[in-house]
Each structure stands twice: as C-alpha cells, then as structure tokens.
Image (cartoon, rainbow, N blue to C red; front, side, top):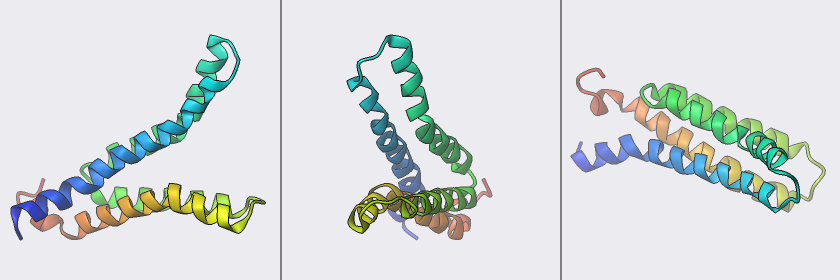
Amino acid sequence: MTTLYTRTLFWSPRLLGMVYVGFLGLFALDVFGEEHGFWRILAALSIHLIPAFVVAAGLILAWRREWVGAIFFAAAGTFYSIRVLTLRIPAATKITWIGAIAGPSFLVAALFLANWLERKKLHPNGL
C-alpha cells in the first residue's frame, strides 16, 4: 500500500466530515435576513446550528474510532432521508434534498468504513 493511498484514505473522511459540518452550518445563516433583535437572532442562530454541532460531535468521536464514524454518519443520513420522505412535498424535491444533505453523509460513512476495514494498514502501531 503506497503512502499516498494510506494518507488519502486516512484523511479523506475526516476532511470531508469537516466540510460537511461547514455545509450544514451554512443553513443557519438564513436567520440574518430576519428583522428581529440581537437576542432573538442569536437564539435562532443557536437553534439552526444544532445539526452542525451534532455532526461535529460525531466527527470528534469518529476521529480515532472509524467504526463510530461509519455508524454515525450512516445513521445521520438515514434519519434525514426518512424525515424527508415523510414530508408532503414533490418527489423531485425529496430526491434533491436527500441527495444534497444525506448524500455527503453516506459518502463520509463509506469512507470511515473503508478506514475501519483497512485499519491494520493505516495504523501499523495499533494507534
């Protein structure tokens, strides 16, 4: 196994997980378009950032235990997909939302699973 392959396999789910947290955090910025006072906007921002904080916590847990990341990100994507499928919106919108929000979560889960399956090669010292 080449060094480039092992480094890419090791870092790709972690970096994509961080990008995913940032992507989820972008959805909280819509609170600044509202005409409310400072404290109401701060409260709304905090509430809108909860999904990003939950995913960030899952990423922290998964950093050294790849199996946790595989389960967490797969569960997050599944939870979101089920939630969207219960909404009364057009099917095309459901597919778009699931692809845009749950799709990256499933990708990160697959990369963490690949990390876990190759852990002996990625962590030869048992770290």
